Amino acid sequence: MRTAYAEVLSRLTASSVAHDYDPRRRFEWPDALDSEAWLMPPELLSVYGTPMMDALGEPTLKALSKWESMNFYSLTLHGERELITVISRRIHTGGFEVPSDFFHRFIDEENHHMWFFSEFCRRYGKIYPDSTVWVSTDELRPELEVFLAFLRILIFEEIGDSFNIRMGGDMSLPPIVRALNTVHHADESRHIAAGRQVARHLWGLLGGELSREEEAAFVSQLKEYIAFTLQSFYNPKMYADAGIGDCYGFRRELLRQPARRERHRILLNRSLTFLRTSGIINETEALY
Amino acid sequence: MTTQRIEELKQWLLRERPDIKEIGLDTDLIDNRILDSVTFINFVYFMEEFTGKRISLASGTAANSFRTLRLIQKNILEEGTHARTEIGL
Image (tube, rainbow over all chains, first blue to last red; front, side, top):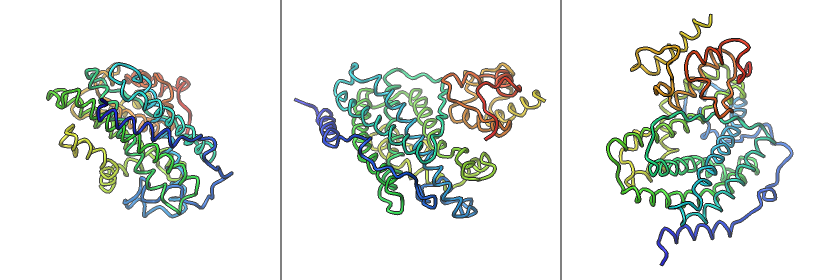
C-alpha cells in the first residue's frame, strides 16, 4: 500500500505530465516592449513604501521597474540552476526513491523556466550576473544539510511565487510578462506542494527535533540564506541602470527603511507559516 | 596609498564585526568567520564603491580572491593585477 507521501507526489507528477508544454512554442514574443510600460508593478519594487520612492519621478520608476524585473528573472534563473543541481544530486539515491519520479518533472520544468526567463532578459534587457558566493563554514551532519537544502529551495520558490502571482494577474503589464509569470506560477505551485511534502518527510526522519547546538547552527544558516536572498532584490546595478546616482548608498539606505522589513515579512509569510506549523522553527521572527 | 586603502577596508570590516578587535593582513576572513555570505556581498559592493571597479564573482573561486586583506591588496587594489575586475559601472 502506498503511503500518503507517495500518493501526493504521484498526483503531482500526473498533474505535471497533464500540463506538459514546449516552452519554445508556448509564448508569443513581441519584437520590443513598450518603453513607457511598467514591467513590474510599483508595489513590488524595492523602493515601495519608502520616502525614497516618492523622490523618484515616474520615468525613473518605470525604468526601475524594467531593471528590477531583469534582476528578478536573473535571480530566478540563477537560483533554478542551483535547484537543478541540488535535485540532480539526490534523484534515484537512497532515501529519495519516492519523489524521484517527480524530480524528473521538476528538473524538466526548471530547465523550461531557465530558458524562458533568460530569453526574456536577453530580448528586452540583460541577464544580471550571479553574485552568490556561499562562504559559510559551519558544517551540519549530512541529513540536516539535505533538509536545509530542501528548505532553501522551498523558501526561494515561495518568495518568487509571490511575485509571479501578483504579476501574472496584472492586466496593466505587457502580455508576455503576464504569460511568463502565469506559467511559472502554475509549475511552481506543484514544486512548492512537493517541496513541502519532502521537507516534512525529511523533518520526520530527523526525529522532529534538534539538539540545542544543532538548532543554533541550523537557524543561523537558514537566517543567512534568507537575508542573502532578500538582499539580492536590492542589486545596486539595477539602480545604476535606472539612472539613480550613488547606487550603493541608495541600496544601503533602502535596506535601513522600516517599510522594507514589513515587505520582507510579507514575502516570507508563507514560508514562515510552514516552518511554524510544521514544528520546525517556532520563533520565526528571528529569521529575517 | 594602497596601505591607506587597506586600512579603510579593515575599518569597514571592524564596523561590521565590532566583536573582532584586530584583523591582520593575513587573517583569513572566511575561516575566521569575519565574513559570511551576506557580509561578503556587502563587502564586495563596498569595494566596488571604494575603487570604482566592478568586481565579477562569476568564477567559482572568487571567494579565494578575498580571503585576506593581503590577497585583496594584490587582486583588487593594486593597479593592473585585478584580473577579475572591470573598470567602472
